[in-house]
Amino acid sequence: MTPTWRSIGNGAKITLGVWALLFVYCAVMAVYQDHEGLVNANKKLTNENVQLTEKIKAFGVPTEESKEKAHRKDVRLQLGVFLTEGNTLQQTVCSKNLADCTAARRRWEAKIQIYLQHNLDPIYAQRFSAHMTTLGVTMDEIQGDMNILNGFINELN
Image 1 (cartoon, rainbow, N blue to C red):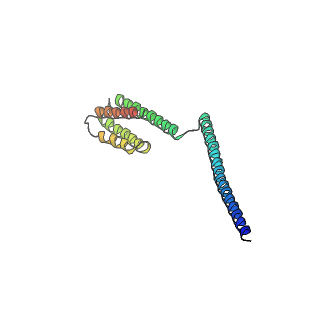
Image 2 (image 1 turned 30 degrees about the vertical axis):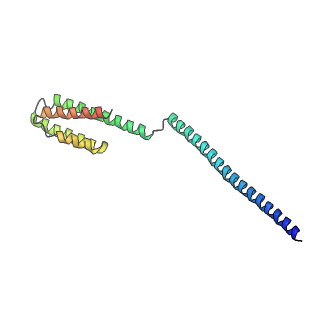
Image 3 (image 1 turned 45 degrees about the horizontal axis):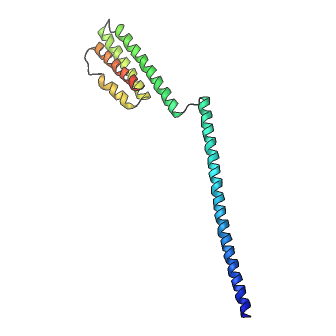
């Protein structure tokens, strides 16, 4: 009877060994298949994302970059309007009466200051206001303000 149990024991060892190998193989295959599924799903989503991004660009939906570019353009245009106002101020009011010119210049500068504070980085308003009292002659101050506005326009290109 002893030889029979020994042969059953070896058979059980072989069976357990084969079963353990099959178990490890199946576990590895399950992990591998899950990984492959995730990789394929990731590729599919990446391609879909690229296609949707291209469609958004094709339809002209504004991106952050295009919004910033449009904002800078709007600011440059408004600064151009301020330059025109300054030029008009020099040629009309300031050519007639110095007191009226000073008051009109202060209103013009205040309007620019408010615009700069609300539409650009605060440093622009600080740079503009730092210049406002450095010159003594009103016509020269207006020209100095206009030079600063031109500089801002160039910076925003």
